[in-house]
Image (cartoon, rainbow, N blue to C red):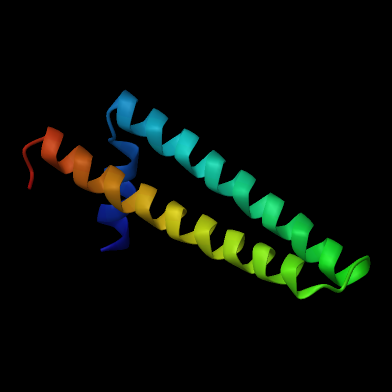
Length: 83
């Protein structure tokens, strides 16, 4: 199962691979911003507003990352007429 998943990631079209790469970079950027908010909450200002912003951004980055991975698998499958 995992070998098939890795094999399908290696065989992506160029455009699908490019979209996945930039999407995951965007998710990583959101994750870094959320970590900055959470570190600011922990070290400097202990306001609940910073905590909720940090946690919400972290959840959002994880959800977007998973959606980019799943959607790239589906789009590649549709392009190759596998689905």
